[in-house]
Image (tube, rainbow, N blue to C red; front, side, top):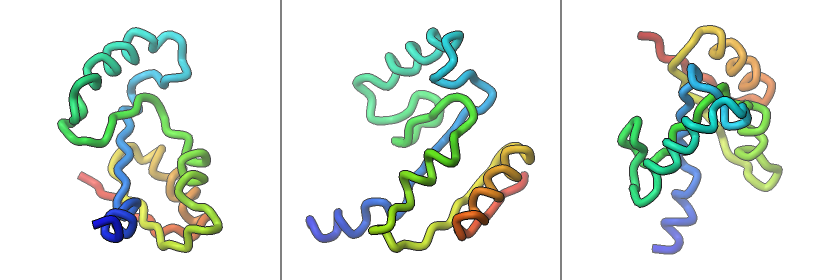
Length: 108
């Protein structure tokens, strides 16, 4: 079981961003952040999506996020799946190309 948990950890990481909301770093978003935190407490699922992955607010910092994913000791292939605004898609695609990540965008 321990081998399986070590092997599977990091296989699929889900990062959800509600980009129309103010980010955690914006003081004007204190009320929203407090409400989201209170809804998360005691619950194993996100109140917005119903998933275990937490919904983040504001525009993601892809540089910071990707630096957490890729470390020299992690020699793994990364594929990024995206669904959202074309503006953010272009920024994300550029960041993926820079790091030699595969990039897949879903358009509805």
